[in-house]
Structures are given as structure tokens and as C-alpha cells.
Length: 181
Image (cartoon, rainbow, N blue to C red; front, side):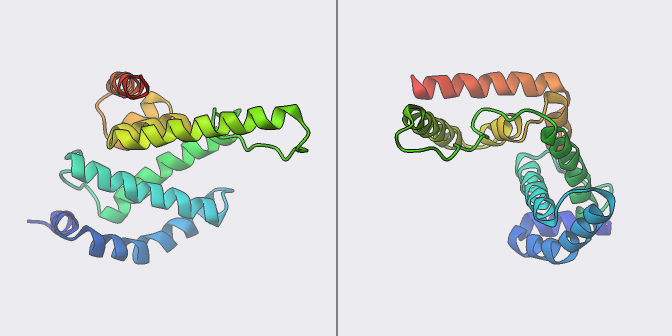
């Protein structure tokens, strides 16, 4: 058995310990690389690294990550680079529903109450998304909060094609409609 497979087996057996080691070893390297090669803030790079770790754990739990070509750190960098590309694309886009902040308004502004009601409805919707569980939750978050397209989600989560992602997204939305029903 090679060292890469040992690293993956260690991660399966003790994900908390191995994740802590990855944070200590890979996070500073990723943030350093990102600061040198992108114009993304350290804070955003740390968030991207966190998302990469979560995706890696989901891939392991779902069986999509069954063997390593490189190290776990290399695997995280690959996911992180895909997330950086998505982050850059999202910066150039108009915000998605639920991403906009409610502007500060006067209490007498008749639109303030409508905005607060809309925000509460949005929060209730995302609570129902959270209740769907994995992988539905991750798929919808990557689509609607992170702004990734089907091909990007397939690449990040290890699905065979963007068509698989579209089919899964349709099922997730059907579940969500039934939950609201």
C-alpha cells in the first residue's frame, strides 16, 4: 500500500485528527499561494479553503474520493482552485436572490417592511434547504449561494457530467417544493 492510500485511510479512520493536520500544514500554503497568485483577500481565501475541506469530506463520505493520485493537500488545492475560479466569476455577476443585503432605510420608508418580510421568507427557505440534508444541501448552496454552474459543480463534487448535476438539482428542488407544500 502506498503512502497516499495510507493518508486517505488515516483520514477515513480519524477525520478530525487528519483535518486538523491539514489545516496546520496546507491552509497557510494555500493562503500564501492565493495571495501571490490572485487578488483575493486572506479572509476570502480562508473561507475558500474551509469550503474545499468540506467538499473533500463530502466526497469521502459519498465514496467519490476512493483513491488519491497526489496527497490530500494536493487534492484540497485542486478543489480550492476550482472554488477560486467560481469566486472570481461570482464577483463579476449580479447578486443572486438572497445574497443582497437589506439597505439601511428610515423606519418610515414603506419599502422597509416589505424588505424585512422578503428576508424572513428567504431565511425560512434556506432553513428548509438545510433540512434536506446532504448532498442536496451542498448542491443547492453551490448553485444558488456560490453561483457555480452545472459543469463547475460536477468538477468540484466529482460527478460524471453536468447532466448528472442538473438531474440531481431537479430532484432537490422537487423535494424542496414538497417540503413547502
